[in-house]
Length: 322
Image 1 (cartoon, rainbow, N blue to C red):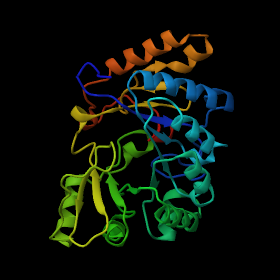
Image 2 (image 1 turned 135 degrees about the horizontal axis):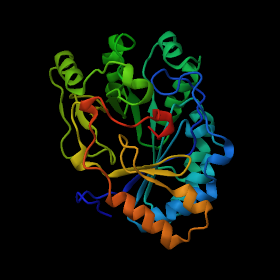
Image 3 (image 1 turned 30 degrees about the vertical axis):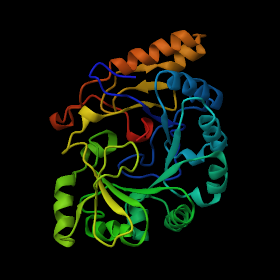
């Protein structure tokens, strides 16, 4: 359906858990608050809402977290989403630590694509960022994904003084592998708000200096997101830039977010939205729930205001599905 700004909203980011087995410093460091089990929607509640979202025009669902693979039977949820009339594409964003062992079940469930978050190629830097020693597991997950039939994207958040020196090496993964390596600006949300941002335009210029033949990918899309893609002649894959702060793309935003606790957020950078869990557990029928979904989508804010450094979003990234 269209919102009040005439944007076609057809993409739902569905956070199935706030839990994670890593403790990334900009997202969910040690000590972060985790909701109680009963506060999180059940599989049945997620699937009921997914069907209603589909009736409101949502045809693409990305399963996120937290780390979605720590949730039990998440492959069954993926299968349920794929079986929902109107849902044509189901993808997942994961940190990759559990992907190698769970990939067969996800493939059987019909998962259409996977994004793997990886900010470094150095095990020591990985431990510094995540506070965990799981680099080998992520590498195994990435290899398994690349050997599977799934389209694969790799998400990297450039961090000043942390992984700045290896961004070219991370980008070069697209030289020998058929994947999209995307560089995502640090969002001024939660723990990341206090961290400096390496801008997308700055990084693109830096890569152009390293690879003078870097050029935009024309006539090809790699999903439903806001990344702008570039490649180098002879490379198998491409490099993407997601510059939410320094390249505002709100005018073309096509998504809304449902948190693991059932709160529908029409914009990442806004606290407005609708508590669908309260309606669900309060006995609301499908008509009432569809109305709430439509009204929330219709009222999606025109744009974020990250540049003002005064955005009201108080929840950390792991609480809002990334």
